[in-house]
Image 1 (spheres, rainbow over the protein chains, first blue to last red):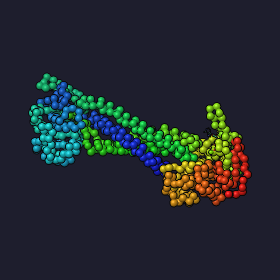
Image 2 (image 1 turned 90 degrees about the vertical axis):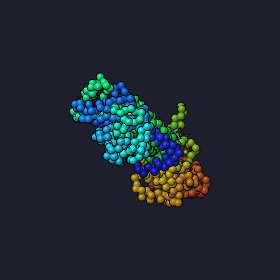
Image 3 (image 1 turned 120 degrees about the vertical axis):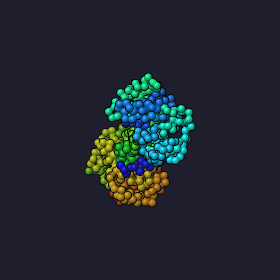
Image 4 (image 1 turned 135 degrees about the vertical axis):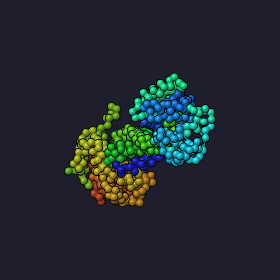
Length: 380
Length: 232
Ligand SMILES: Nc1ncnc2c1ncn2[C@@H]1O[C@H](COP(=O)(O)OP(=O)(O)O)[C@@H](O)[C@H]1O
Ligand SMILES: [Mg+2]
């Protein structure tokens, strides 16, 4: 079959305007398809992150946005003494925007010495001692660094907060690369936050044997009577609740992805049908020479496959390249969802284009393969 | 055994409640190495017969044997393979594939025979030489004159060295001078290469180059006596 490839390509090239229009339409649709896929993958990653059931988040009861939750910092000390608990770390959260946004910058302030043990991060540049010694030092996730073009030694301001960048880190948890870590005390003193002596939440690390449900209840029972009541959940449950609205929204984008695929199907099928109708006579001549109906079938499927795959390659490739360079993350209430390029997005994009190409070609290819030779020569 | 044996062939077309039967129980044989010309009034069924023998159409009844094989019983796919190996078809309008060069058009039948690229090239070049178009190998159909296009069509029909070449009014679209060239070429295929040809034509002069001349009249073949002997 390889020796027929030039014929297929030359045929497509002959109607290059039509071919290029279809390829571009396909590319645009597959771009959107891949982007939607990246959003879904980001959310799935967040919700299925492992070890999130081995840590708990203690939040102020009946509060939802991090800027309204305020727990006494010394809760951490008391909680860490409860049975089944390895450690409890107070975390102050600060962000420039509490609502869902693509350009949210989330700061987490932790006791400087503890950051290293509770977060799976690896410094790419800068160093830990610099971070631990300097009061306004910050470690910046590489996605934020890329997006905001930040480098070590630089000062970075957002709102009333100004930090000095002591390091840029990578993390095993993708979304974390869109965060900035500072000292707890520093963040507590952010003008306007009035947070000295308090923290937004406690992050509790469980022992291997501890039961997450029981321990959560233990903590909430401890503070039921005050001074500030708490609401404790596994980190996974906490994040799922926080991004709950987004899950629905993202679920809806599935239809957008489906619509893109259907659009490509319609587009490629239309082009292929037009190509077949233009060449009824040519196909009859080929059959007269001795090409079988199967040959004709394969040529036409080949055409629609090539168009669809080139479009898919362009669209998916562009989407992945943009995801790679822009390091986008969607933030809501202090939780970040990272949109990343991935091998599975590439495979899904290309597989979808290939399948659509095949599907779009079947009907016209079948029609051409079955058409009678003599009437086509006589009347076409 | 004759190369082509048309036995009791009937072809009917039904149009509404009207029945047209251009061929009714027609018999015809063509011997190996013959050049048969077929004339007849427009609509008398010449093309229909040619298409049946070339295996691109099926009769309503009767059978056709070519080289001992009953081609009228072949399946669609088997018939296509048979055509690739045994039939060269010269159309009235050359019918070249517009996106392919002269060389590539002529190469098409060879692609189906599983030849190596080098063998294909060798044979296409021989065919190009036979039709005196070696210098036009890389030209596309739109860059060729009508006569040149028809010569490419002839090269394509003969390149695979088929058992039988059929031509349906091969000069019907050409001016007098070009017609001469094309007829000379067809005659050479027969005399020099020993190919068997069956040619439908409207032109009595064209028919003269054939070794045997037939007329189709009311569904029956009639041997027609030559007006003058030999070529004019
Ligand atoms: N597909 C068809 N449907 C109906 N009638 C047809 C069809 N094809 C050919 N015919 C009729 O069959 C007759 C013979 O046609 P044809 O073989 O093309 O004649 P010729 O080549 O001798 O001019 C004509 O009357 C033509 O109208
Ligand atoms: Mg005719």
